[in-house]
Image (cartoon, rainbow, N blue to C red):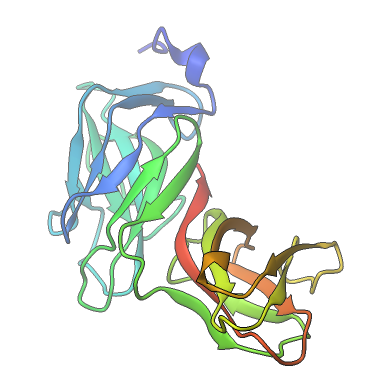
Length: 246
């Protein structure tokens, strides 16, 4: 079977195919087109595909049963013989166990569940291969809270809020102390304690100082930060989402 007529438009790229959580056990793949992971064929989804983690195989979990507090990667898959396009969930970011007859795949997102095995609700934005994922739940996702006087670089893990494929974090920062100001510094290269430079953000006193920023993370979903004063204002960072490069 030859390549799709639109293949030239999607080589090593994704058009559409954003994803969102529709229930505690389901994610939805929106319409779009992408090349497969080997850049050999195009895969087109003309509608919406619902993928349910309680289902085994096609439009479900690739193998085993659901585990709590786990990242699951979302794939678009295709059966070349029948032309059928479907979805799949897997704990592997590169090598899902493919259902019988399905040979093409492309990772198009990720979803995490909590201790109760309920998916964290999210929506993804972006028409290309870089997706911006925004969480619907933003009341219990503190990365840093009440930390004061950290003038040495601190490493924080965001692995509960970003998968291993994430390249950056979407966070809200601000001062906990409304009577003091603080300058927050974020390393441009996580794991290097700012040796390659850092981003500096001045947080004035008052709740109006809250700000949403994008910060880099490494493959372990870590970022480095510190403040410029020994005492005074305390700061917080909360996770809103992340950027995933597919």
